[in-house]
Structures are given as C-alpha cells and as structure tokens.
Picture 1 (cartoon, rainbow, N blue to C red):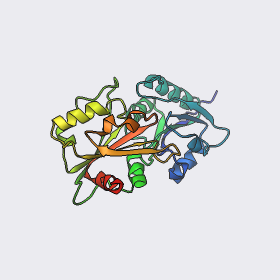
Picture 2 (picture 1 turned 180 degrees about the vertical axis):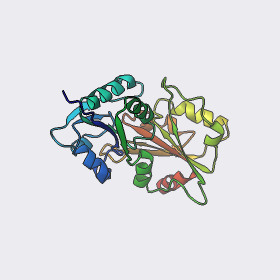
Picture 3 (picture 1 turned 30 degrees about the horizontal axis):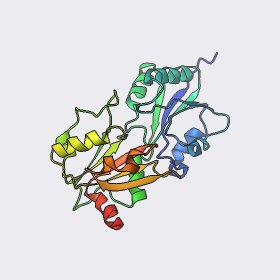
Picture 4 (picture 1 turned 120 degrees about the vertical axis):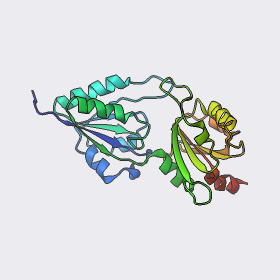
Length: 248
C-alpha cells in the first residue's frame, strides 16, 4: 500500500477548444494518474492527456442527472490518499461557478495538497468569438458575472437586482437556460430597459457553437434560444449593440 499521499490539481479546461488550454494545464493533464472531468469538458481537451491516465466522468448538469458534489469530493480524496496525482478538470475557469471552493476545503481538511491552474472562462471566450469588448469606456464601466440558477435550479432571489439593472454595466449570466425568461422579467422590473441588447451563445468555441442576438425582453422567447441544447451563456449590455447593428 502506498503511504505517500498524492495531490489534487484543479485545472481549467477552458471553453472547449483545446488550443485555448494553457501550457500549464496541458502539463498537468500529461502527468496525471487520474482525471475527474466535468460534462462540459470536450473530448478534444481530454485527448490532450496521457493515454495511461484513468479518466472518470463526474459530470454535473443543471436540471438533469448529476454526480453529487459529496461523492466527487470523496472520490477525489480517496484517490489522492492512495498516492495518485489527481486532476479535477473543470470547464472554463475552475474558480468561476464550478464549486471549486467546496473541493478546496475538502482537500485541505483532509491534509492533501491542492493546487489550481486557471483557465479561460467562457465569458472571455464568448466575447472574443463575438468580437466585442466586455468593458468599454463609453458603454460599460463595470463587468459582472452571475449564475442563472441557485442550488435548487431556480432563479436566485438573493442577488443584487439593482446592480443587474445598471444600464452602464455588462452582465454575463452563466447557465441561464431554464431561468432566462424569469430573469428577463425581474431585471426589467428593477429598471433595465427592455431594449437593452443581449446575446445568447451556445457551445462557445466548439463546432456546434450558435449565437442569437436580440434584446433582453425578446431573447428568452426567441425560438432559436428556446431550442438550444448545449451549454448556454448570455451577455447583456450596450457592448452587444454592435452585433445587433451588424445584422440590421
């Protein structure tokens, strides 16, 4: 039995395109004994790991069947305690809406070494693909990220709606597919203009990528948005106006 504990590395897989992995992430993938990967990690990214590494899916899908976080933590700690070098591979950046805090706490409580390798978060990748700036001196003095659902899968009620209604901010909503209509109604109630530009992007940087540009009032009801099946991100704010104008 190996009495020497391994280590855990939380690694950002980026939005899906393997060319957007950092060199440090590739190095971690090629030295891992075991890779616990999320549902949103593309197969092309997984192919960057060494063939001998054991690859275990631990996907979490909103509103669908998922691995419990407690089970993921337990598996991670058990493997590292057995001397394995474990990569916990997460879509985007591991520190943005990925429950990394719970995994870091679990590793530290067990006395197991844990490290973090940043990745390109989906908001950055989406902006690059769309050719827009998330901040702009005349249009957006602030950038804010918000989750589209709480731990029950419902629209969060404990977020700052006044801040989200700021016409001079860019708001990015992660995982809003099921709650976008409710979000739109609520943020308009708090003062955001219904004409505010908004864009939904599915499967950013992947071959299945799709984009729909509209307004915050009409976007949730657009048939192409309603029928989106992949991972969806929504960007709201005047910085998106250039996309809408280019289509007119």
